[in-house]
Image 1 (cartoon, rainbow, N blue to C red):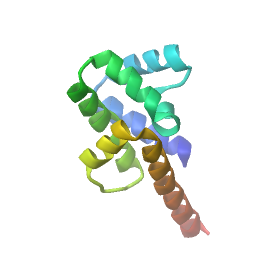
Image 2: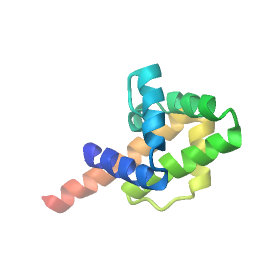
Image 3: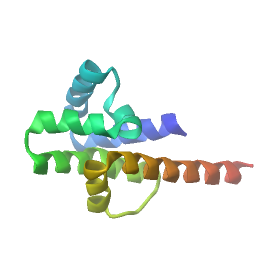
Image 4: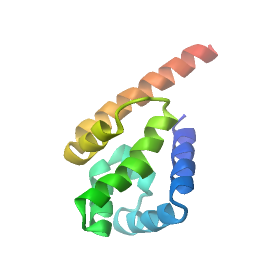
Length: 117
């Protein structure tokens, strides 16, 4: 499920802003040795650092995080939530964001496992 999730997020992000994910991935790989989506799921604070250093503007950072990462992530796990609320959580408390998203992903994985059994 995780590989499919990552592919779904990458696809939606690439459709939303063609070429931009490639630019951000280059920055993430250079700085942390991981792609953006990996940082989104495993170390969100590092993704915030990359995007905020790229934009130097908190509103642009929030918009990029919201539209290119939070929206595709929630869409990929079929979760209808308040994008602004998740974006604020991501920016203000990345560790709690990571825990909450991990819990949602685990619940979806458990449901999918039950359905295929």
